[in-house]
Every structure is written in structure tokens, then in C-alpha cells.
Image 1 (cartoon, helix red, strand yellow):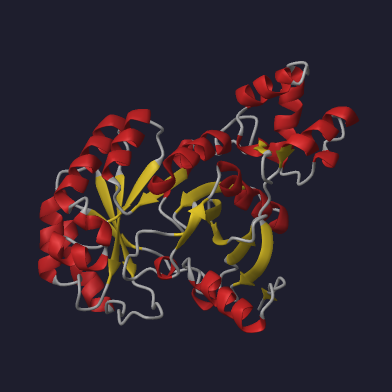
Image 2: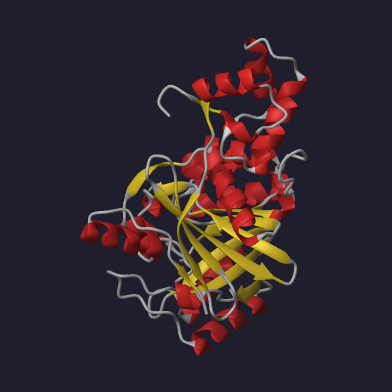
Length: 359
């Protein structure tokens, strides 16, 4: 790949300019773009492109592809979890979930993560690199092809912090919503951040109409500093100010993700403090019973704690729900499959072949 162009990360205008430099007519850009959006893996598959142009493209460009390393299928709800690999051997996780309204995919934006949140398996493995726009897009294309489905909703909530890979994520959003591509509208896309405040302002100013999900997980700096290191740079009040700006500029409701951790952030006092912080904001709170992560002593909150927490929020006029758990038998939350695969690879001294676990 060294020295070659990432052709699938180009938009159609960039592709047009690139091909014009090769002396190609403008309409070729539309043809090539169409093939790339269909998910072709080689230039040889572009059957309506002249062979001499295909040869030039092989010499100058590469096509990103997400190859399936492992695939787990839930016996309970048909949730599918993938471990994808790219050309350099880096791996990421994606999850496909079926709902009554269609299929949703949770994609990764980085290989690993720098944020190191206490309750997140991804951060335990460290950061490797950013994903390109084409690599994020390829996760959707491979999942659609493998399952024979059309994915209608995208959640950028897999491995990595999307706002830490801002430019590539913005380009991905442009490509995935393109009418000539997968044509997934912005209102069917959610982007999750742990709170990179300057990028929230940047995103708000783009007015993209996607749903911003903020991983809050605490009502105050004391708790959040212990569980989420990013809070030491961007404290809660600063983060919530940015969220209010986003809601005002876009007219879109903020979704606050709140991992319920037994004895840490699930008390009635925490609920009242949280309500006071976000009351009056265009917002929704999504409570998530925390996942068990190796190296962490955190346990999910009891059901009575969840009920009490919700009651306090609703009394303050704040909508709150408990996230439905899908793929619990395959550890559908991101980070754990990649970690286990890396350990297996190290133990065996070789790359793992695809493994499919079914009912």
C-alpha cells in the first residue's frame, strides 16, 4: 500500500479530478465511484472500465477491504459480532443488530483507543492507529455482503473515539450518506463521544442532523475523573456547555450514555445531581448496565437501583430508558473479541482463521 492512494476514501469530485489528471473523461469518475460504493475488492471487478485504466489504478491506488477474521452469532437474538482485519493486519470489531425497524451496525473508528476509560475493554488494549474513511465504510459493506442484508442505521460507537479521528470520520459520514453510495441518511446515524469538547463545537457547526451520543457515565467531576481520564481535560460543566450548543445549533436531541456501575454512580444522590445538570436541555438519558471487563471490579447495578434512578430523572422531566441488551452470549460490546483473538494469536504464534459460532 505504500505510496498508493486510498481511492475509496475519495469523494466523487476528488475522484473526478484524479482521473482527469490521467487523461480520463469525467464520466469515468461516476463509474469508478459506483463500483467502490458497491464494495468491490479489486479493480478487476470494474467490468465497464477500460483495461488500461484498471492497470493504471492498480499501479497508483489500493482498495480498502474489511476481511472477516472471526464471526460470532448470538443464539438468542441473531446479533452478529465481527472481528475485521485490514491490509496491515490491524483488527477492529463491529456488531450487527436486528431491530423491528431494520438492521443497525455499530462500527469502529480506530484500532484501539487512547481514552482508557476504566470500564471499557477497548482501552485496555491501547491505541494502534486511526481508521481511514474507507476502512470505516468497509465494515458496513462487508457486513451487508456477508449477511445478505441492507443496513439502514449506523452507530459510531465501536472501538475508538470518533472525535479523536475527526477528519476521517467526517469524510466517512459524507461517503456513507451519499445518494450514489449506501445512502444512509444522517438521521439514521449516531456518533458517540466521550467528550472531546472542541470537536463537538466543530460538529455542531456542520449541522449534519445526526444524533450525538455523549458517554457521560457520571454526574460530577469527582466520579468522572476516576473512571474517564478525558474529564481531567474537559470537565463536565465544559462538556455540557458544548452539548447545549450542539442541541441549539442542530435542533437535535443529545443522547447521554450512562453506564450504571454498582456502588459507584448509581445512587439516588447521583441521579438527582445528574438531573440538576441536564434539566431543561434537549436530551435523553440511556442507562446501560455496565459490562464485566477483565481487570475491572465493576459490577452492573441492581434492577431496583435502575428503577429508582429512572424515577428520579423522570420526576425532573428527563426522559430515561435502559438500553436493551443484545448479543449477551457473544460479548457484543466492543474490545473483548479483539483482545481474546490477540491472546490466541500470541499463544499459537499465527494468525487466526475465521471462526463462526452459531446456535
